[in-house]
Amino acid sequence: MPAHLLIARDPLLLDEAVAGLLPAGVEPSRHYASELNADTVFNQLGSADLFASEKCFIYVDILEMKPTKRESERIAEILAKLPAETTLICTQLFSDPEKRSDEDRRLKTQAAQLWQKGTKPLDLRRQGEGENGVRWLMNRAREHYGLELGNAQAQRLLLLSTDQLALADAELAKLALALDGGGRVTDELLRETVQGSPAARFYEMADSVMQCHPQAQTLLLDWFRSSGDTFRLVNELKRRFTAMRTLRRGGNVYPPFFARSLQQFQRRYPDPAFRRSIELLARLEQDLKGGMYAGASSKDAELSALQVFAADLRRIAG
Image 1: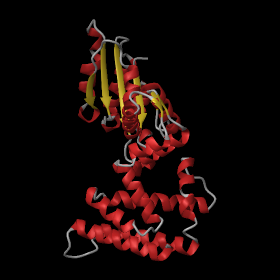
Image 2: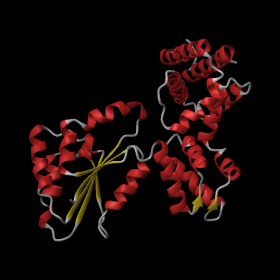
Image 3: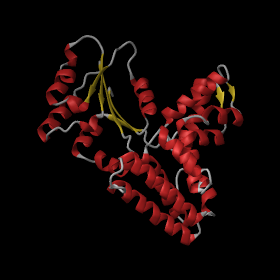
Image 4: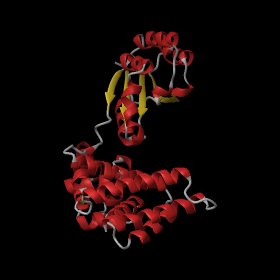
């Protein structure tokens, strides 16, 4: 079938899958689906059999196209008659972790069903996550960079890269340079390579805040001055506390290595302190959204709110 639908959460996985479908020697024509309609689809695909040469079209973020019922019927006819000389690759990248609950709903809409029925769908969303992501990263290190990367090392690298394979791949490239083209990655080399990365500094700071270390305020200030992405920290703390609550209730948390990483915090937060910490975090988020300090700049207010939160958290759980 010359028509494909690729669904992914990681751009690197998506790019690799697209590359594997491209016909040899054919320059693809890339189009954003939001700019397409039934007429442009027909002009590109419906008349493609008039040409003697092979053609390849890539429709990016296909769910952004909102065809009417009549347009959907017309596009379905075009897809059903797509000539063998024409390759169509439709892609959909879901990149917002806060909206994952909407993904399946969007894939069940009439517009989404149109493309799923008229193409060969391939769902890559789980391939780069959790243990699947660890295995992918180890294979990538070995096959693409000639690196011997252990399971625990891949877990650490994926965690520091916030489960984004594209970021982890960039760290693999740095490791390959350090080893002059390949070889076994030692824990010391991995630590030296990634410890200065923004992701590593962020997680060091977040760990320090949750562990109520004395240097938490210093790390928080340094990170805020270099990044200032306040809600990234709030969302990371929410992710951890929510997962810890799930574990306390006997539930499962994925990926497993994330669940194991939370063990270092569980002992510090017995039930009374845990409940108060959850309330404190909810109040921090509300203060940040509502503008806590009148007369202060938004960034000054955000920093003050974070510093007060870290100090209060230390009083509760320190």
